[in-house]
Length: 127
Image (cartoon, one colour):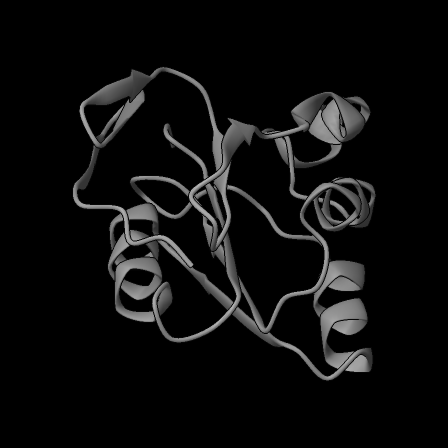
């Protein structure tokens, strides 16, 4: 497991160890960073007014990262990104922990856990 030294976010961007991203990102417990596969959920934007986080996205992320203990979802600076119920149901069904909170709190949770467990974080950088 790799501890990330510095993560800071503001509306529209996130800074991870001096690297700035202007899109939603996924970070895993090995320090791997990749773009959130938002395209898998974009067809549902008209339902919610925002692109939600869906089970399709979660399954894609898990297929890339592998086993985990906890998923942390940062729902944006104002907590506006919807997380579909089937995401919550699936994580519960496999006996893993799910934390859903605004992005700043999600960053803090990730930093507190990354050296202690296999944690995956999804950070929404706007709303």
